[in-house]
Amino acid sequence: MRPWAVLVVLLSGTFLANLDVFIVVVAMPALEGDLGADGGQQQLVLAGYQLVYALGLAAGGRLGDALGALRVFGLGMAVFTVASVACGAAPTAAVLIVARLFQGAGTALMVPQVYRAARTLFTGQTQRRAYAAIGAVMGLGAIGGQLLGGWLLSADVLGLGWRAVFLVNVPVGVLALALLPWAAGGRPPVRRGPVRLDLPGTGLAAGALGLFVVPLVAGGTGGMVWWGPACLAASVPVAACFLRHERALDARGGSPLVPPRLLRLDGFRRGIVLIVLINCGLAAFVLMLGLLLQTGLRWSPLATGAGMVPAAVAFAAGSLVAPRLARGAEPRLLMLASLAATAGYAGCAVSALGDDPRWLLGAVCAVGGALGLCVTPALSVTLRTVPGPVAGAASGVVSTAQQLGAALGVCVFGFLFFAQVRATADVVGAFAVTTVALTTTSAAAGVLARGLPRAAVPAGRPDDALGAPAARDVPM
Image 1 (cartoon, one colour):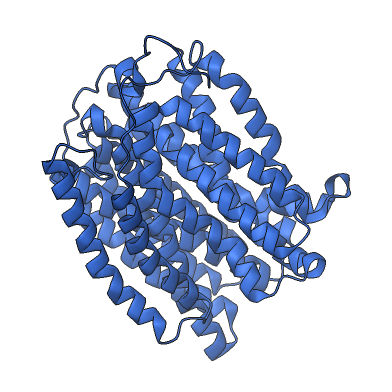
Image 2 (spheres, rainbow, N blue to C red):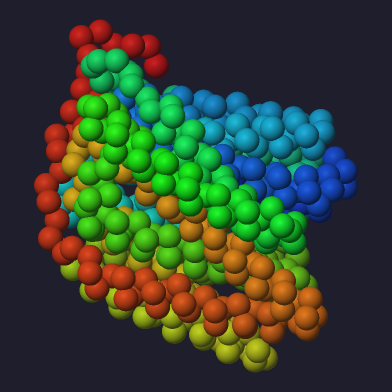
């Protein structure tokens, strides 16, 4: 097995997963003109992907534990690639929505395996570098999505129009599937023993998360009325039933979706909340910046994407240098980076109201770099105390926390932004108010980081953790 080659192949899944959250945003006007997609259908194209993505992550992580991370990643990439072809060929908005749901299912299978590989293939400083690479690729996919989408639409590649936004995934997926067996040193290994999936737990978790997330998505677009608070309230008892079921299944010696031992790890619990806060701020900031440039300043889709490149570069750079700066003291770096992000948000609010775009560019870079410094150590301190046998389940929980944080950020701060726009008709002023509100996420992250563990523990054996080869290989 070639550890770094495996990670590079798996990172293609992380890149595509984050890219497809944002790349579709710039294609909405084209979808309306070509497919006649109304506002509700456009929202489903955007939100349906993220919802299935978030709801399936824990199950995807558990499948990695049962079948082997590389095998499940290959399955997820195949589903995602085929779904991307279906998106690009969709004749109607309804077909596009269904294909987007399958894209979300594919990413839910892929993404947890990336964290699992970083946790189990590497140790010490090399593990921190692996997390840095994940953070950098996440930032490039998320912030670079609008740039690539804007370019594809402006260039009208091969006359495909908006369809190129989805079809661009296909060559990357095919290449990743071709390289995976080589990186793994043959066919991806599988684990011995039967596959035991917690289907009732998966259903309860999906129900609780769905009841929590769907009203937030609807509320962000003004579609939530009486049923929204009812769904949010109902998510609490469903979540309690899920936790009770997981404890009972674990006591019987079963394989719970979220092993209770994970929730007994103080560092893991704190890390999950920290990851939610960081991704809440990141997703909301990317959305607000895009709205400021395209709606407030009237930039074209391509120019808007180009305007976000400095933030992407700063984010990637922060993710890459974070391991060298931390050197085992991740909580301290997290506190300092959170303070820098807080100052950056405030700087964006002030500079947006001024006349010199250079000040805004500097503040945007400061936010990108500070959040990049947060992502890598947050992943490291959350996952490094997790025992190897449940690393896949933990990775699924971490990935779910990232997506839920992003959904919260977009819905809560998006609602605040549009409320300001409706009240004042001032997009720039709404951006300033929203970025000031974003300081709460980074400030809370800095406070929470104080209680995180500092010392790392050795990881388990790579081959055993990823799924030891069985007596007979199963075809990929």
